[in-house]
Each structure stands twice: as structure tokens, then as C-alpha cells.
Figure 1 (tube, one colour):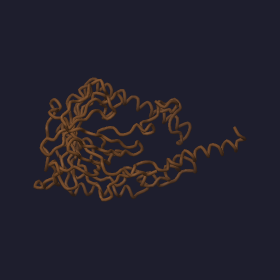
Figure 2 (cartoon, one colour):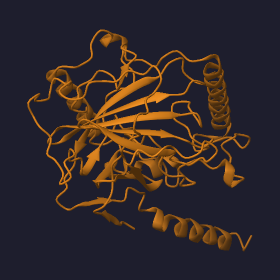
Figure 3 (cartoon, rainbow, N blue to C red):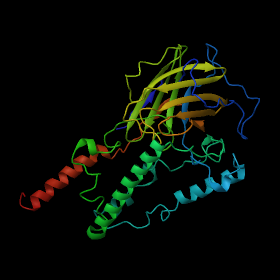
Figure 4 (cartoon, one colour):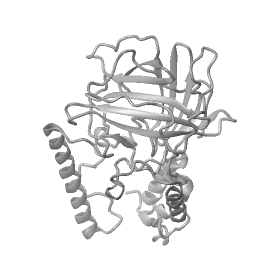
Length: 365
């Protein structure tokens, strides 16, 4: 069932005087070739830049810079237009989407082929207006920094686990057919609730909440705090309230799913410092030691410059920073629709009804 989320919601603030050790402080403003350097952000009644609105972080820009663009920070308008045209062409081509043939009734191919583009969060996503060749802007080569020995070991363990599951799945499908999703002895079993994936468990939003299923957010400001509402497909939404009164972080032994955020203004930039994540946190290999510095700057009528500096000394040898262009969406209706699989309201009933029919046809077995 759809629900609309209205009014009050969204946007983050930051910790006074806190900064990441060794991390650069980037100049905010007209750093993208698409911006007007003379544009001035509107102000609130309490004289801070106005960040209110519904914003999208969805973009086809890659996280890391490709070798082809090794010495380039930005793409040209023509290159971005070509990439967007290619994306649109793929979206309108059922063969490119793997939906050219519907499988036999009741097979996985049949079910997957029944979905149209409205169910895909990637449909309609284009290159963001920063035109950056990578989201990562520091290190300057646009790639992740080197891992620590601990981070390297963790990454190797995850890679080995993924490869083992993929091999087990392939072996099961070779003997049981393409409709076998996972082998019985896979760690993806659903025998216990702890083994069910994050989406099925509705664990909800994590931060940074950007792109993919978590690409829409609403910012709402007040003189003493900023609130951000994130809408995440399938996992539900989340509110994040960020005080602007320069309070310290909560004690380190208190851990929270979205961490503890505090904020302040640096000129026209909202700065948000977040620590105290739980041991269930997962962002690019970082966990409970994750430390984020977010910077929000209004740089155009329809754009926010959003920079995120990430630090975890147990994973990376240095902090790293990424940057996105948050694009304003239509605010006229002042709402965000829930992103969810709406057929889920009926599918469980249908599955149970089908099971009862099968039982009846087998004589009640």
C-alpha cells in the first residue's frame, strides 16, 4: 500500500570543530563545469542557505575512475549526452534487459519476465550534473586508497565466501536446472531469521544513503536542527535528526544503527560529523569504526553539492572523499511515495492459496 510522506523531513548538520585527521577540506561552490559561479543560494528566515526540498542522488557516475579517464576529472556535455542516450536505448530494448523470452509457466524466467520497467530502480537514471568521471575525488586518482593489512584480509575473506557460494549455486543448477536459485548447503539458506538478507529483514536505511534503492531524500531545516528523511526501496524509510548546537558526540559505548550525528555551518556549507555506528554497519567494507564527514552546499537552484569523507583506520590507510550532485525533484506536491514491491501485499496470500490447492490435489498430503 502506498503512503505519502509529507512536509517536515530532511537534512543533515554537523559537528562544531570536528574534522577527520589528515583529511582535506574542499572548497565549496562552482567546482563543476556546469555551474554558474555568480549564483547565490536563497536564505532561510534565520539567515542560513536554504536546503529544503526533495533531492535525488541517483547517478550512473562510477564510484572509481576508469583507466580510460585516468587524467580527467570531468566528462564533456557531449560525452554525458552519449552515455545517457545509450542508457535510454538499453532500457527500451527488452533483449538488453534479458526479457526477450518468457519462460515456461511457473519458472523463474516466467516470473522475472512479468516485471516491467516500473519495478526497476535503475530505469531512468542518468549521469549526474557534476559530470565527474568518478564519485571519488580524493585520492586525486579517483580510486579507493590502499587497504590496511586488516582491511585486505577482510576483503579476501569476503571474496572467497562469494566465490564459494557462486560455485555451489552453479553446481546445483547444473544438476537441478536453471530454476534452482541456491544449493541446499549454501549459506544463503533461510532456515533461521539471522540468515535472511537485509532487504527481507527490512533492516532499513544505512548511511551514506546514496543511489540505487536509496536515492531519494527530503531535507527540512530549522534554526537548531536539520532533519533528513530517506526513502529506500523495499527496506522502508528512516528519519535522521541532526542537532546544530555544537554538542559533543554521545559516549563511545552507545552505538546506533545510523550512528550519532552532530552538525554546524561553515560559511554556506552544512557540515555533519557522524560516529558511534554499530557492529552491524557495512559501508564499502567499513563497520563500527566508520567515521563520516558530510558537506552539503547549495550550488544551483536545482543542485546540492554533497561531499562525504570516509575514515576507518582499520580498513583504509587514509581517509577518502566522494562527491555527488543531488538533484532537486518536483516539490509541488510536497510528498515522497513509498518505494516498495506493491505486489507483496498479495503474493504471500497467493503463495499460500497455491500451496493449499497443491495439497488438495495430492489428497491432502
